[in-house]
Amino acid sequence: MKVFVIGLGEVGGPLMELIQPHHEVFGIDIKPLEGLPRCEVMHICFPYVEPEKFVKEALRYIAEHKPRITIINSTVGPGTTRRIAAESRSAVVYSPVRGKHKKMKQDMLHYVKFVGAEDQAAGKIACEHFQSIGMRTRLLSSPEAAELAKVTETTYFGLMIAWAQEVERNLGPAMMKLLRSTRKSLSSRL
Image 1 (tube, rainbow, N blue to C red):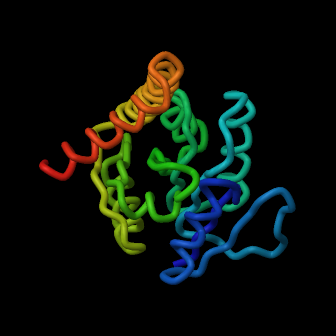
Image 2 (image 1 turned 30 degrees about the vertical axis):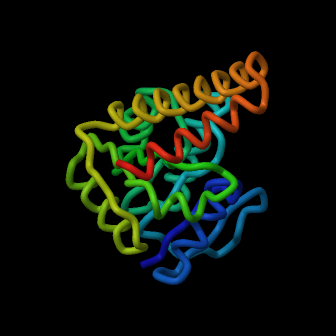
């Protein structure tokens, strides 16, 4: 299977490394590659900084490479995947990346890979693709369900970081050490 990964940063780079042992994979980043074959699966992994620009670029890559299925891995606003699927008139699903950037490759294999798809058949193709590289998957009811879950998870994670920083600032490093040891003790009992 030929797979393209568009964007080789903190998400695309590790994803490409996971795909390489299992499929023929091509990474596309800042410099476009010439003479590429048609791909079955195309992963979108570039940042969603400006929504309109993101949609335009995703549509351009889909039109240029005509993949059987496009998987958006970038964190996007709810409705983005459905819009790209409608405007490209092709199979597009959303599958957010979960994990810490420091150990992204390991975390990609650790966490369940959620797939949100308007077209459940396309969602199943995406799930099979991820399973072929060793990931566990779960197909959700819609792309919006996955998009909203990702935004919610990211926001929650940010709040937890802010909480920990506030606790440390107010209670000091000794209290943080105590909290960490308590958490480890509780985790080992579950």
